Length: 419
Ligand code: ACO
Image (tube, rainbow, N blue to C red; front, side):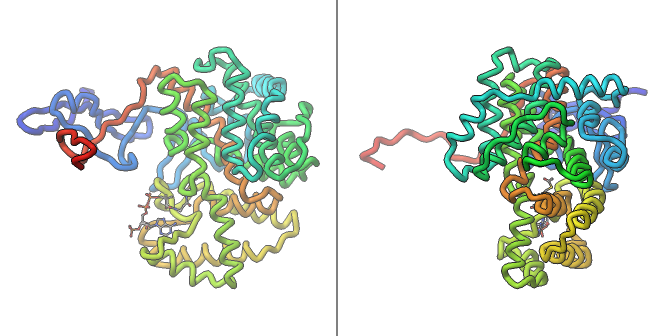
């Protein structure tokens, strides 16, 4: 079939834009030559309709509520797989055989020790430094210790990052709480070792399973804000640790990963205020208030967040395992029901997202609210690394968007005395 083209004409000049079709029939207009041909650039605040790359890792359809890693449904992976198997899938494109998975897990265990300098750096940070700042510092410290060329997507580099990340996150949490570090136990699996290092005791099977599931659900989400940051930083050939720090920084914000912390803080605020959810729903609807219901809405999911459905079930399991009957949970459920039936939220397709529930589970497990977003980072690390690897393998050019300048036009410099 002949390649389809879209002709764009402007100011007497025209450009032929080839149409690219993905494997799920998503169509894109390739505008690479548009500026050279016509002088036009595209303008798209927040990249709401801009495809920055071609990727074979994750597919999502926000209208239909579909999320698949390498073609596998998120619900199947959450139910049948485990986090390191999903990390392997994201990185290498296929589910591992038993031998491949055992080997992968062994490599992760063997490379999990972090250098002593990390502990020293964390301890030197001002007390109360936000865990996401601490995680950035711990991550970038690794770049000073591993002196090989970490701007190349070698297996060794990638395994090194994945293996050490849970240890860093656990250390950050302990440091934030002013507690001693728990030694890394290489006999434990990835998630059990993380929980053991975080809490200094073995977690119950229900909690370990819920944590594993949460990490799977967060493992990748195609070109979201933090992943785009990782790809953007990496596109300049910055090393993998620097690229991941870009992702951690982007994830920190409450409109992205920071929402899980913000959700819990908001539930606490509502509880303190007497628990009247209708008051807060009304505030969220009043634009002048500047208040948003955290954990509701999503840039791409406009029907439901498939991850939220799965995590809701885990929330019930964890709370009943721990015998928790929390007032915050009651408030959360009231908010959810109010939003699902209120025309403001229905008309704008604002549904609970994954972070509406994840904060409730993290809280029940015993994580301090301020570390929630580092847990999101722990889940997202396979996605960041896989996307970074893909970007390198595709030999993508440095990311460098254009702009439309709206400032002053040329004017003469005026001497300080005459201003
Ligand atoms: N509460 C109240 N109103 C909202 C909310 C909310 N949580 N989210 C969006 N709206 C309203 C907006 O005011 C806007 O209304 P308008 O059309 O009348 O002006 C409309 O819904 C569309 O909102 P946008 O901000 O344009 O949507 P966008 O796609 O840019 O933003 C976002 C998506 C950032 C997630 C937004 O819904 C939000 O701020 N949610 C709360 C924060 C949150 O939960 N973030 C986590 C995202 S999931 C993740 O990162 C894993």
